Length: 239
Ligand code: NAD
Ligand code: ZN
Image (tube, rainbow, N blue to C red):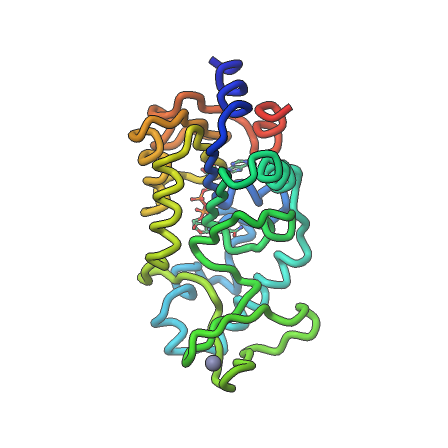
């Protein structure tokens, strides 16, 4: 079964990958549930919402500035780089979809990349929707202002209670439904709608591979579920 998985992946022209917070754990970026996930005693659910931002934009921006600094101090790990290499091998038939907002896939060189939940390395204009990268962390004074219209900007992320970008989601679903091999890495597969991408692929006939040190709701569906960290699992699959 494990040899089959390697062969399927090697031969496939259309490959999709979904990643979650687990792939960045080995870069030292805390998951929300991990110990380093709290900030001044607040839970993310109390800060990452439109209501929290409306009430106290300065506090929410201070939290994002802190997280931005944390991810910029982190480096992409072997798993991020292996996915960038896989993209080079597969070309047009490859798509990487991530729930992560840490920008590490982009920094590792991934370009056929959909960031479903946005990125904390960017801001989005509250008035005109223009997006721009944040300045380097040591020069950054929140809040940022729009270079187009001068209005205040918000973090370019999807908050609890907000909808994902419908166009991004449709592109992700199309790719998963037409892929030959789908890889799901480091996500607990409980947060919708990203959780259903693996299911969609499987239902449409893809070979489904999961990499996660723990079992998830996707595990029973997977053709192969590797109980491993992201880097070790990918190294084994791609070597
Ligand atoms: P999650 O629900 O995506 O679950 C994390 C998963 O990673 C778990 O199933 C865990 O078993 C697995 N995991 C742990 N270590 C791993 C490793 N070394 N290799 C592979 N898998 C590993 O994560 P969450 O923290 O509950 O996040 C919920 C939401 O918040 C998601 O949208 C998530 O992407 C976002 N978030 C993003 C970041 C980031 O950008 N780095 C950090 C925290 C939260
Ligand atoms: Zn603007």
